[in-house]
Image (cartoon, rainbow over all chains, first blue to last red; front, side):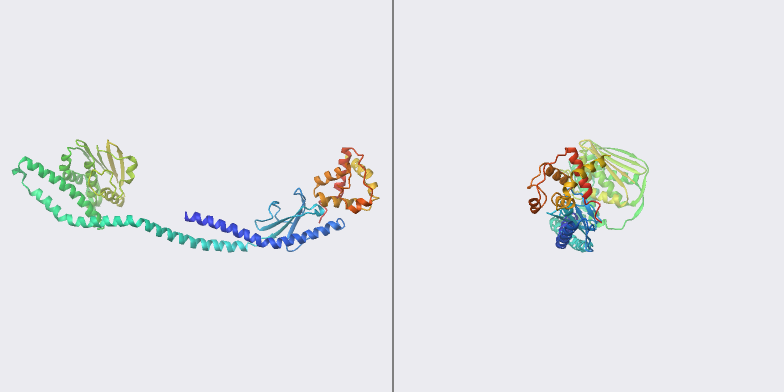
Length: 366
Length: 99
């Protein structure tokens, strides 16, 4: 936009300067044409005793009859624009004067002088100088405006980040306490009613725990140095399924595991975050009595569900931070942004296919 | 053959009378050029004057037309007139004469 504007302004400036140059030249060319007309008058009078066409070191000239037929010409450039008084052609300037008395049949006298191009050099220097200056001024102005308009959005993101960071820090102790106490409780001595209640508390605490781990990763752990090591993915998937077992049962989901041996070299914390988030989403957005599938091949991991699905046009945006497509489910919308960031770091490709009310399939390939 | 025949027409029908006049055919040609400029215009102007001679449409000066007797309408056929005028143009034209 800025470049286009500068080009338009430069074109207008160039044309104006060319007109100005021609206007300056016009006075001297008019004088030459007048002198030449006088000489033609003399030649007409003495023709055909004298047949030498008048020449002048200051300019070249030509004469044409009323039908634009050349009577005599000394011009270097014979492309004449008879309907323009003055114009520039390559390296020449032409001035066309129409006569009232047709000496030797001459209706048009054309005067030609060389265009030294000095005016063009000055124009180019000005255009480049002022163009660059304008470009930087527009650029700075544009940046200032963009900053001004984006400031409220940036402020709200910073506020949200700070809120999450502060909240996360405060969540650690109570959450650990809740989970530890649930584990320690002796369910055998409980009545059935209380056992169910405790199960619900356990599910809720684990859901919050996943969110806590994501937020911790986002705010504190992601800057930590990677501890890459060979990981047995099959083993990791199994342990994560076990961890999510209580959530799977709470939604009465069946799971279909098809796990072959596979390994990868990466930071275990990060791979755990990826698998946890994908399994957690597959549970969260699944239908009651649905199925959760995990297929593991040598260099491919597929996690699919029979849930609500996601519109195809929204798939490219699902990895954006704070993006949530289903308001009924909790969360900050940070899980998949973490997943994407980790996968990009390890050059792992992710492919998402989904159909509304049929389910979503996520395939990781490395 | 046509050229020789046409030149005969011009020499036979034009030169004899013009030899008697104070202005030469060359001078008259320049007067016509001054008014008509191009070949087409000039030939049309000469032919019109020869067919309908009049003081008002003469390219010559007032002094000239007042001094000499006004020419009579030509007796040449249109074809002969064209040929005679073409020879006149070719004889006195400026093209290719300037150096």
